[in-house]
Figure 1 (cartoon, chains in turn purple, brown):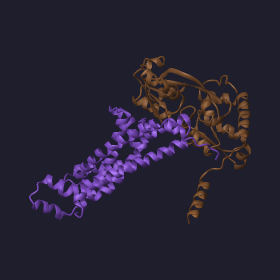
Figure 2 (figure 1 turned 30 degrees about the vertical axis):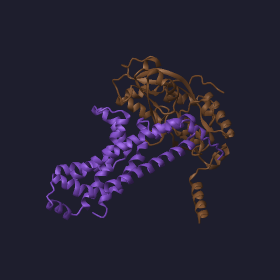
Figure 3 (figure 1 turned 60 degrees about the horizontal axis):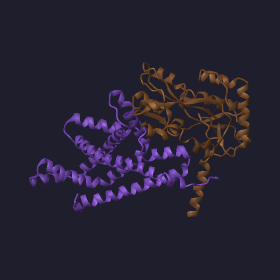
Length: 224
Length: 260
């Protein structure tokens, strides 16, 4: 193929790409925190004695995990206004991402909670811990420690999936690159560099996760 | 080992990459014409009920196939990916509401115009907008990289316009219907479709940004194909076939198209 690569064009617009990457990072980071919170609540709901609550969580998880993220995103941005909820592109992207991650996180956290041996809860009770303390210290923390690698890879997936929010005009990294490429047609150069930026973001998030894992769960090492 | 892997990968890539048809003979020998069309631009290109593209552009493509004597294979493209799709050889020509600009002509070769349109902003009748200067504080949805985007981007900040770029025109129009944007960038005729699908809002063309002419795009080296395509367009402009397509889809006569 006789194509002359011109990476100069990329450096010219690099600040715009970084601005887009910054929105990607913000969307992803907020989604990870809120999505995990939704996941913990969902997992608790799934283990609850109330059949209604279990059914609701079940329905939520199945509906989200068995439909495409892109469709969920379009529904939030273009569909919900019909029900009176009008969100900006960034808000709609965040909501769709949190709802999506929450469903996956629910299943992951639930698996972790189920991995906690009954005897451990009983031991906690024997030590005189209250129900909240038992849940937090004896169930949730060990559960999160077990499933943390799975959660971390789901977090990375949600960050990568954020690239599709460009369709509802949220100006994250991919959208910025699309816009520039639509103008100068340097698709090979730009998408190559954007791929590199995503890779750097993934590695950065992974090292943050590793740090969190050491800090939070280091003292639990050896326990289950 | 490494060499063998590289050879395997290259062989697989060769299977995936389509052959670049550069001349009329290549296309006839292959037995089909591969055309990139946009199926998100109502009137000019949309997906028909039978799952086949229909509209002004697909009709021109089928006519081109007829005169080449080969069937047409359609590939869906968007405003953003059409040039890469052409340059990487996935299609022979682009017939996809492809406005002629010198910047784009640095990457692709254009035939003489076969259609005209205008880059416009459409909004509901209640929206009081007459020119770009009335857009202050309004949200305008445009197809990313399309003429409306190119014309408004440089002035958006100065004029206080919130420009929202969507991957295709249909999403921008959907955002208009949902009330997510106040005006949407499109052509001269789409407001009719909007009024049919979302009655009561009296959608109309608010601002005509610029009149546009569309050419058939091909790779820059394809001079033989370009020469044939121009000959073909000259012929169907004169024998009434292109006028018939224009009346069928635009509900307007073809009018005078410039040549170059």
